[in-house]
Image (cartoon, rainbow, N blue to C red):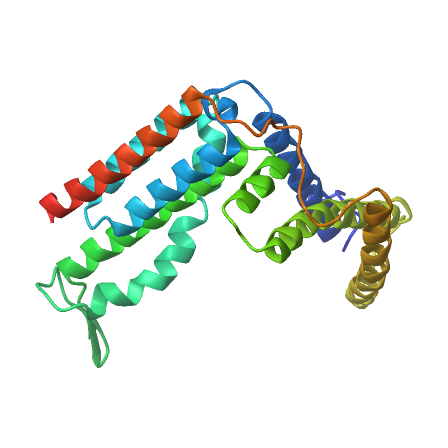
Length: 284
């Protein structure tokens, strides 16, 4: 079934696809608009901001204390509030996916790390017994991932994409890598709009229920069409960029000058990172 929100009230796969594409575009547009709003991190030079986030991520990775990770996360939430990032939007964007993916990676360690056991869970001939050190290690791992991903999300939310790419160039990230990021970001929007137009055209021409075989043929044909159009579009987009003077280096309207506030923010982030590492070693 595809084009019905009909008698039974169910929404078809086409409506789900359109809603997913539209919400992706809306989230991206909201993120870009928020990066240009007035807030603390938005006012910091992108190069200083990138250095701030890198040192704090390094500190979070080196920390072996859950208390320190919680403290770093509290600082991140404070920075997000000072930057006028919506709390619900920020927290949901980070924590809706972390427990699933990080949990899948760390679950085996809960049962195989030696140490005192909490309880025995017999499953036929196998007994699963989660250990206390395994659970502590799992919580620490998830906390590290949460802090690191929160920092990355906050950096993207408060920095225009062009300024972020330009900052990567200042720390000598290979130009080819920066170019791939820039092109991939632009292509995502082009393909989203392209796919959205194709699905809307399909929906507007549906007047009755379609069979499963027809839906599968349409999906396979749509995938092939998108691949062909993406190949042609990549050549057209690059030719258009080259015709407008693109040479591979990222440029933005951001002034290449760091003020006293930028240096103070960078020094403050370094101080937080050093204190976090020292505190982690003392608590270990």
